[in-house]
Image 1 (cartoon, one colour):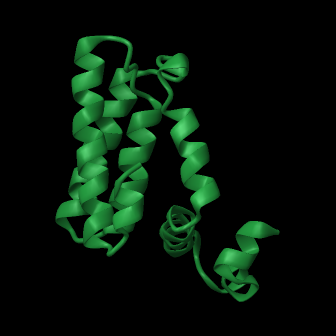
Image 2 (cartoon, rainbow, N blue to C red):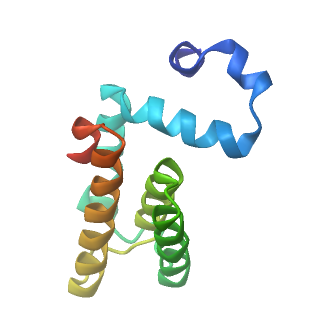
Length: 119
């Protein structure tokens, strides 16, 4: 119900998923409770829980393509997804994650969401 309040009931039926998902992400990034939840997911205490570097690399490549095509919402979502598959417990994983965080922050800044860029 809270998500519907952020996005609007009419969009759920009117928009195709490929349009709706980036819109929902953009709305969620504006919600402080969502950003707080994301912060807990990035906590080092759960690093490696969902790690699969090949998936993370694939998502990063897709995100970079979306970014270059100007699809910033999609790119931010894909960078976030890549982070979910990144093991930040190793130094190489931390470096890879730092690039993902930076790329996602750039997407948020270009979308005019500076608060979301900080997470």
